[in-house]
Amino acid sequence: MYAILDIETTGGKYNEEGITEIAIYKFDGHKIVDQFSSLINPEKPIQPFVVNLTGINNEMLRHAPKFYEVAKRIIEITDGCIMVAHNALFDNRILTTEFDRLGYPFEKETLCTVELAKKLIPDMPSYSLGKLVRSLGIPLSDRHRAQGDAKATVALFKMLLAKDTSKEIITETLRKDPKRQMEPKLLDIIENVPSETGVYYMHNDAGNIIYIGKSKNIKKRLMQHFTSDNRKSKKIQLEVKSVTFEKTGSELIALLKESEEIKQNKPLFNRALRRTLFTHQLISFVDENGYINLKIEKADGRKKAITTFSNYQQARSALFKITEENQLCQKLTGLYDTKKQCFNYTIKECYGACINKEPVAEYNNRVQAFLEKCSYENQNMLIIDRGREIEERSVILIENGIYKGYGFYNLNYQINNPEILKSIINPMQNNRDAQHIIQSYLRRKKVLKTVNLSTNTVI
Image (cartoon, rainbow, N blue to C red; front, side, top):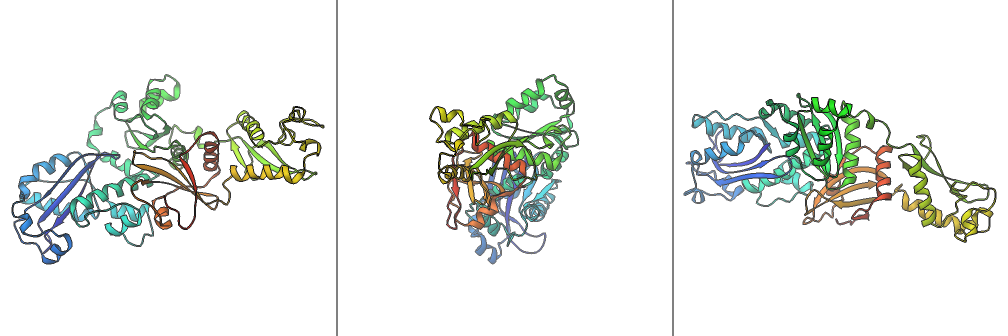
């Protein structure tokens, strides 16, 4: 649990500043579960430059509560939380100083979104809150007011959690969480996860990830893990101490995250998925008569694949569908082994490429149209699908045929700047497994839409 906050002060000498406004959002890693904000009478004048910056003046604070009057509420909302702030050193110092004046030891573990952003989103032009969130397409209202800045920090921290593919933030949080000292029951773990699409992470007593999985219903999948009596499940049940999760909304993003993060974190119980996800691939070649042929063969990284398949049966089934939808010849797609005409020609569903009757150019045009539709090689495109919340959409970026990563954007915030679009994308590896996942998913299922990228793209 996190307490994400922002504080405005009077300015003045070091350790003599007073708090003029505070806003705290209690955040469980996915949503805000509690919040508190208030103007505060600092019992001292505000520096003129601070009045100009924040718009808060002495008259506004005349009847505001003093710090000791809101101290109990601050203690309650931050109880058991790691404190998160943009420049956390400053906010922590200010709060600690105020509580010291009351004789109360206020000690919290802290996370700084400035430092996290520098690590997870390098090379940004500025890491000041206003400029950073603007570069990332995060809405910010009431700049230099506690509530507006704290709300923007929540959105920023949520994005940083998604970009942290090595899960260092979560692992460190679990190690520091005092509530984890009690032995949890498996049913208690299940109680705290959603029945939604996403990726889940099982942690051992030290907070290390021992298993990563994805599901369209995380709660249901965990129930299967914790009630199964097979050998692997029993080992997991003995070692798991907590489960964290990330909602993705999109099943495609969940598949991509699962694949990459297993490779990156190498969890103990994910040995099977560390291997390549596909066994067969579809290739093309031109025969002696000039016709483009399609062929299924075993996966071979040395050869250029049109698309890949998890097994031979899936490949053969897909190729029958491809042949039918594109009016291709079963002989030239390797589905009908014959020296003469294919079966489809006898029932007038093939135009005779198998016996050199159909013009080569006409046949190849249909094959080429399929190849362009099937492969995203050299394409610049966005794959738009459901987001984690109703007002959100997920986006996958393909640039020059290369999978760049995924991100999320608010439907109420149009993104028409390519640089902002790229900044919200969580970078991911463009390996053969990722290509397989994207191609096979688009082949089997529907997404909300795909968008061809241009310099004036708006999403």
